[in-house]
Length: 296
Image (cartoon, rainbow, N blue to C red; front, top):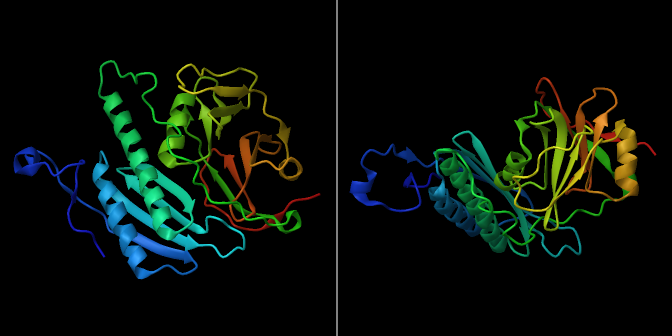
């Protein structure tokens, strides 16, 4: 089903305000149920709510996909999971939430998308200024309550590396990486820090960030509007060693310099209880899903 209407700004505007504007038709919103059972009326509700928030996009929305799931794991307090992925004229905006019911999850997801679209609009507006400066404190960080899905309590002996991904890392300042965390609704991001030319990871913490870089030179973090803990000299190790550290310390992720490639690499805990890896590369590759067990 294709939503009727036109994606342009956040208001109706009238015929006079539309003069000179390039009107772009809203994309078809793809909605899929990936696990469990979801009522048809809930799918229509998701399509209506997401379609409405797309009108806040500061640029044409080229793609919109929503997935819903209902987890059946015993004891989960928030079994309803909703995810969305938007392509806003080449810029991704995403959301990933969990709640007690599908309707509540959809509402939280729409709030996440609204926050991402508003942040994207602020960034676009800042670039039009002369000089192009973003006022301190103008970014929106962590305004929403924690709504992440719960980790599935998979036994350590059953965990595997089920996803391997490598891509060419963007050269960014730490402030730009922080903005991407908001736009992509991610907990961490792997990038190449512009000032030091070193691979780095910026991760969310309670009230701020943790930055780890693969160099002994601390990067500039003066543009951030939240506290940041900086760690230098990321350790060099192989994947089995990183997996042991991840499991023994019960961490969400480990950032290290791959002993084979010399590039920054992250091994992280997935919400399904398995592990995934992301590696900086000189050439992009397709994601791989071959299971690789950690070595004790």
